[in-house]
Image (cartoon, rainbow, N blue to C red):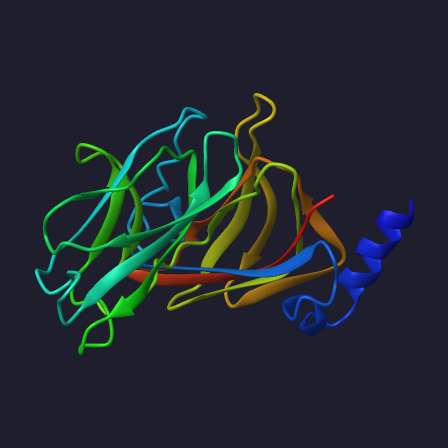
Length: 247
């Protein structure tokens, strides 16, 4: 009960102390995604840098590789030199890897993964950002797991998987669109057998804030999806404000 009261007190307080590390066992996380080409006939689509629904993998470890569409994204180039990938390992624990780019040539990541939560350019040459589209995908040219669009510096994907032993509390979220869109938060608990379930929904521009936050337990996949748009070629963006706690 004491732990629960501490969590609720922190969740009701301003977020700055959490971001500054002043609340033990808790961290703030902002998840942002954008999809710039959604048509009325292609919904539902995940709000991420690529198109279509995010290709979630089964709970079986996989290998990853990365490459760019530009030769300038290389360890001594003018574009992206290194990229940091953060995800979950075979035990659903957080793992981080810094990868040196090699232009249009494939670079294999070490170890195996279950999920990818972020992919960010961390060092660059004189161009200051990635010169081409950077693709993180399953080994042997498999399904795309993250895309850093040219000049973006980070993969914009409104997805997240809660690590083992942790809990994610959603305090608020918002979605915008170039046309009116219906956007929903879908979640799947990988400790069971149920599929994705709708947890909340807004019409753009819209947002939800909670007196009692939405709770996502360990190993839960969160996927923000546009389920309807008013016109072809719509852009939809979404931002989630999460607090991640550990026992």
